[in-house]
Length: 504
Image 1: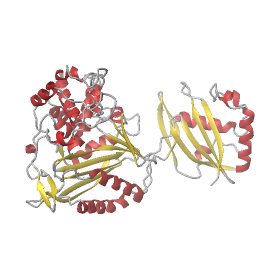
Image 2: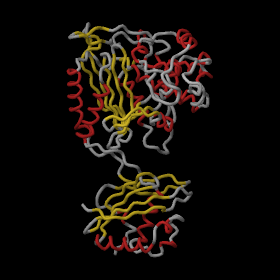
Image 3: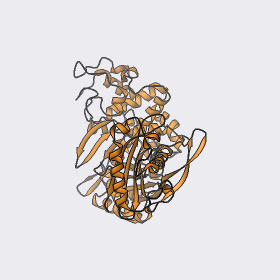
Image 4: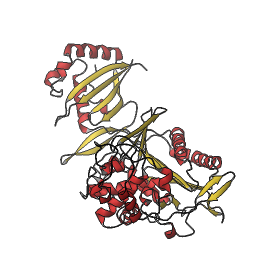
């Protein structure tokens, strides 16, 4: 039987390369899986153009703008139709669309920034910042006070209010506070169910103002947009250069009917942002930059950990056709039967429909804006994502092999297959030989190695995370799969082990 301790440097199948990770004050060389997503996204871009063109025709959209983000860059964009059909002004690079509820995650980001700066807490009662909420008649006597976290996750107990909320965009703070003081109605007790609420995000906008002393628009523009170099994003439509403003339409029969543009106001926090594909892509790139976790220097405008926190499924929504849906902080989260996670948000207002979708494990995003009421950009983007992944052969990013997992693998291979002096090796956790009888381990390992024949190398290295992985040894007759998990101790030790034959 060959000595396997050197096999990590001789993979037969799959790419492995050497990198360094920081451990204490020294650089420790380790082997990691090739984390570059396989495939060539360029081959899918003509299909992207074709699909969006087909969708524009299918849904009779006046205008459509879209962009593809990959590898930390806006790599492709397209413009179709009219920003102003009456004047035959075409959609182009400078076209600024109202993106409606895509605004919500930006407001959530501002809240997280204030949280990180210890200027508020997510579990603070909202009435600490909105005194008009005091004295509200809750639906049940045991209902908790509405918290900032409830507002972020649409679990404050307010009813879904899209048709009504759409028309509140321009109301003033004074009008909103008078409405709140008069009393709001609840469909649920706070904290028990997801129900989409524009009112809740209008309240978050006001909380930003109370904490910072400036409007949420000013705070976001100064603290977030300036940091991201988003110079073509606006809150008030009459501040947009006239030749850049996209007008909204509703499809009535065979005609496009122009919709009145609403001015900015208190409810702009739920859906008032006006922006371009180029500008919004910078925001999307910031979200993707949070993955994977790393030791890289923070680039802002908020911590990468806070971006990842925003993207987590905090409030369950539903399960439909095998897809689990939940809500984060201003972001929708889905996971399908293939464990593919997508994060993003749609937007819809009279005259507009939009969506952005990111796949953190692929480093991929699709953005689309349209100037037709409630255009189904979410479903369009989902189909484009599927087409890109399929056509380009993209693969999800693989976790890196940690130094400790690599070390334990090498040490484990030294005791296989006969488990000689395994109990004295110091690499197994205290539970291991109580849960696994060494005679059984030895018998099974020797049998499988004998059946495999000469071991030619490690065929596959698949870390699940920093402390768990699956490794496949390539034998001349058959392959052997080894799985092990490390303990949570300061020096992680092997606590669980499994070995089996893989028939290929």
